[in-house]
Image (cartoon, rainbow, N blue to C red; front, side, top):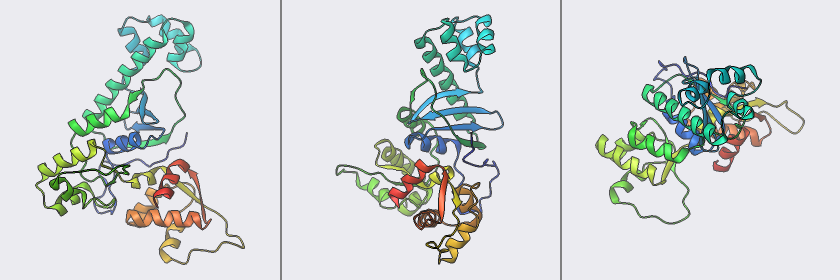
Length: 304
């Protein structure tokens, strides 16, 4: 399994142009964009598995076997036998016919919910994001939108997050004060800068932004997709030529098939929009290929 992002140090420099997203920001982004990923929180090695906008499993906080024993559904001997078999514990217990599919799903939901509550209370700053294979059924299947609404309603807003206007099918009406905020949201400004540009008191600005997010009128910028995208240089041929732009050549210098695009942006301190436009241009010019994060990259191609 390949890591798609580098570890985020808790003492990340504030001098860089880009913002290191918090665990809450990344979780919300992965859920909204319906990525299939595993988020691993360090140093506890607690994992959350996300698939198509849902939390499907968790590991590393409360063992599933311990949970099932506490619920009186299995014995320690059942768990020991299941552990001795190859494969996942829950699937092994199903094949042993000591629990039902419904009981396993309920236990997985409890396990994932407890893990989420713990992580949100800790507000971890060091984590990694990995590609993940789809999990077997049954799964915890916790609705991502419901969780996002809970995060927005109960957790402090991550004001360094960059938001953009959501794509809407129908015209909408919003209050004048909300419009004063919306007109400053352009996919490049952080929420903090939006509130400042609108001249609102911080508390009022946060309240109005929460309402805009909950109504689906604004959404996180695709900039965080750069964490999932790893480009690799393609050899030059008779039909391809190095980019004419000095900045594009500089970006290409750091493309090695190992660094993700977010890391390259951080090294060069490119503005996010420039990093995205440079990467997509290099791809269209057949100078790079995407070795990890092709689905996420295609979202950027659609936007840019």
